[in-house]
Amino acid sequence: MFAICRTRGDSATCKIVGAVGLLPVAYEAHFTPAVEIGWRIARSFWGLGYAPEAAAAAIRFGFERLQLPEIVANAGVANEKSMRVMAKLGMVRDPNDDFDHPLVPDGTRLRRQVLYRLTRSRWLAQSAPPGP
Ligand SMILES: CC(C)(COP(=O)(O)OP(=O)(O)OC[C@H]1O[C@@H](n2cnc3c(N)ncnc32)[C@H](O)[C@@H]1OP(=O)(O)O)[C@@H](O)C(=O)NCCC(=O)NCCS
Image 1: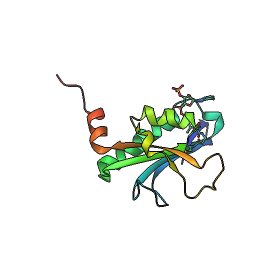
Image 2 (image 1 turned 30 degrees about the horizontal axis):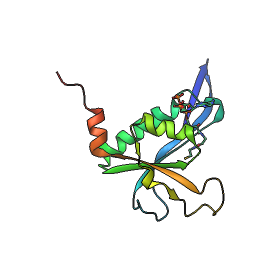
Image 3 (image 1 turned 90 degrees about the horizontal axis):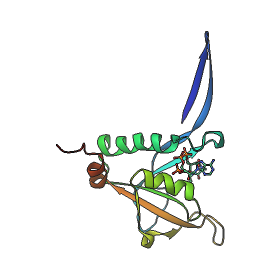
Image 4 (image 1 turned 30 degrees about the vertical axis):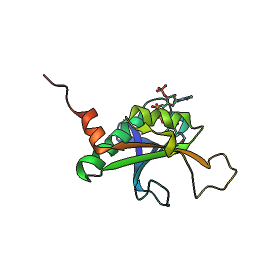
């Protein structure tokens, strides 16, 4: 969870911006076991790039410190904002990975999900400094 704080004199006022982090996928699917990255940003802070900025830091932690081989992310098929964030992070969608979320009731809007993946090797290639 992260917040933005403003100080005035001796006092500080903070607003919670949202939560971004890594967690083990808590259900069985064709891509599990896996570690996922998730995010939720308060509506008044949408469009300011906070989700991709915080997610990039979490991904760096996952690959550098935890040495994860892969990080995944999922969202409802209509959630274009989240898919934009995934794309900005260099995550890749294969439509063959789309799946029915086992914890979401059949026939409801969020049942069908897209899956984006980012392998450690892809992240390393993207993060490498430019050559001479
Ligand atoms: C998805 C979400 C995390 C994006 O976070 P963010 O910090 O706003 O990310 P960005 O600023 O990079 O915006 C991502 C995209 O969202 C869209 N977007 C952002 N703010 C928007 C707004 N106010 N209206 C319409 N679209 C908007 C844009 O397409 C943007 O892509 P662009 O920068 O290429 O134009 C945020 O919208 C959110 O928390 N949504 C609700 C919860 C959710 O969907 N969680 C994920 C469940 S899997």
